[in-house]
Length: 124
Image (cartoon, rainbow, N blue to C red; front, side):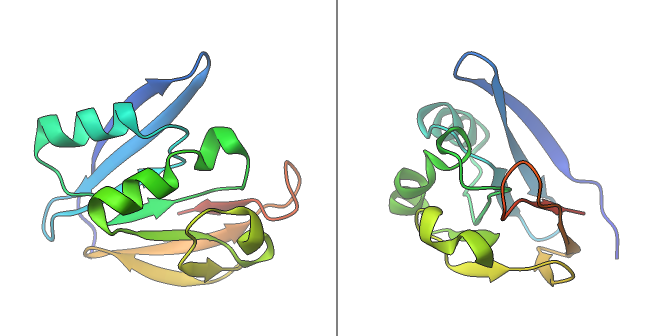
């Protein structure tokens, strides 16, 4: 089943974006690469969205820096590369190329794309 995700771009730091998304049928809310928590919290609260998923593409601090604060606030799960589990704060779902999982009513495919980091993944 395919739905239309609601997607919000949140500028953070001096040159990054965090992506907040909501699957409307289930109400699942995900955040991709939360570098810092404060702007994500502000946007989620403004929209009255409860974050259920954190999707990390890789371990760098400007992509995982807000994980623990968001977990503390929402109790959400952190999805990230199994290869980098030791460097992704709060990781709870360890992924590898070819894995699939559900984000609300949507099926997400994991694509391994080592290069920028040894455990870099993308989500489709």
